[in-house]
Length: 363
Image (cartoon, rainbow, N blue to C red; front, side):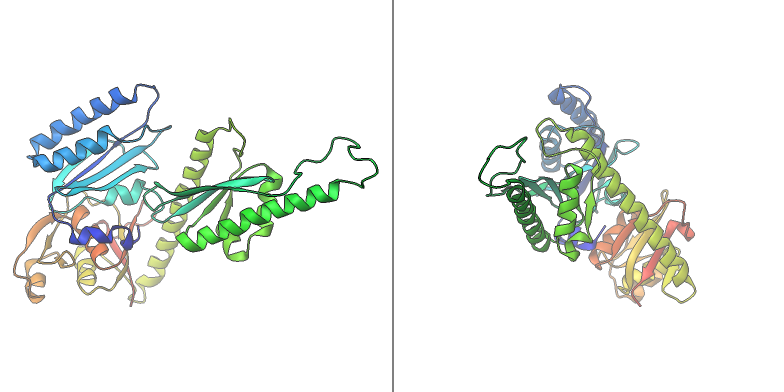
């Protein structure tokens, strides 16, 4: 999770409600499912003493959520002013999580959310392409259709134009022009929205021709999806699943890279572990990537500013903080990372730092 994704959170006021729940629909009765879901969530929020303004904001988000397709989850973070996060999760959480706290609970979003940056999906054939840019929360940011202006795009089945030459060269040239138009527009959208990756859907030749036509900087972020097409009736759910699997795979690669960098940095002072060492690095704004494993119910102290986190009171006093609050580490540490511009990474068993907390340092 890149810090700029939640930069606005550092100026938002609490209390915050953070809700994560399964949002998979196997029936058409989406309205009834949403109603039952809200009933369960609202009962928990009321027991926590949630202010009515926040309850109302969460209710609207749950009831008005778009009908989900396939398996997945949903994340909602709200405060008295409105809904700050409302997005689909790549995978459903193991259980519904409902919290009311002074800080937003972002860790499930790090673990199950989308890539954290815009990405583009292009359904192409030799007549043109349907392009959709998704924002860092998984919502549609921009969509358009690029249609080639030329004719024809299909070869004649037989001798359709005796005496007027072979039409096949014209067909091939027009196909090339149409693909080039799609490639140019994809590159413009990648540059404009900083979209990565670019998922390409379509029959093999169209995908291959597009990959060979885009400039290298676009080709470097291009992923060919092996299912689906631009045609009506294409299995959109299979395409969605393929895209989510690719995003999940990229997350595993990111964890591999972070684990390798951590092991290399441990001997050079560019990686630290444990609550005391990592909170000190966060206070000094030296953390490049915050790595979080199993935190259980670990707590830390938070001072006047979200970046002032510590394992003991003495460290906060040295920073001149006039107050300290005991907060859950799984809320306070990601929030401190956001406040200091650090990336947050949820780590599995491939790396087990002390206290479940590690960090890659900038210097």
